[in-house]
Image (cartoon, rainbow, N blue to C red; front, side, top):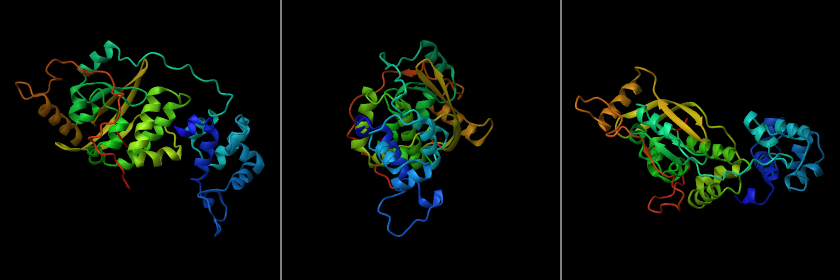
Length: 309
């Protein structure tokens, strides 16, 4: 988190987004002697209707409280979508800092009971994508959904995840962007600092994506995964906030091919005397503390060149 720690989050974000916009996208000639990727500072200033000197001060952190009108103009020039625009507007010094989380993330007892009764993959995750609790079907879907795992860490560092996700490159981009959005003002939160530091050291893919400063809200959607036993599964995802944690549920279209395969996976994972499904021997969901320790060096770091769980 070098850029966040430097206290110039606004400037770092503007520079990162400026480098991703091509002249053609904003109606400017490309020219034959461009030494920087994307737009030049003076081009951004011109298109936003501000002076080049003022824009330079913004990027270098000399002015950390521009007006909303200036930020709106910059968002337009940098082609930001609604999530990115909201993020930009929240980077100014005038934004009140949210109170820091002091207590550990906790899964209420009623959520453990709910997990035990759900017959589709379901688990609970924390703000940093730590798996806090899961039911047997979630673990049958992927052993990386056991409590104590971190979903982003698994995605980037576990080679099985690349085969599991049909579009691994898209999945990694979405997760890293969602992590930056979630972090928000909590740039000194120990869990975030630990996770970002570990992944920055272990994964070139993470370093490249983190440098883009993409932001995204990772909510509901549909994903396709390749299960090693039952094959391709197309599943819908819902993320439901409960107190300080998120309940994530995956389910197929009723009577679809994926529905049949998920039932087969359930029968293979927990057969009862009739060959049907029961939600685990005890009916209880798996639960335990999230893993906050150092990287498992026995698993090689992902360093790839390439809708997600």
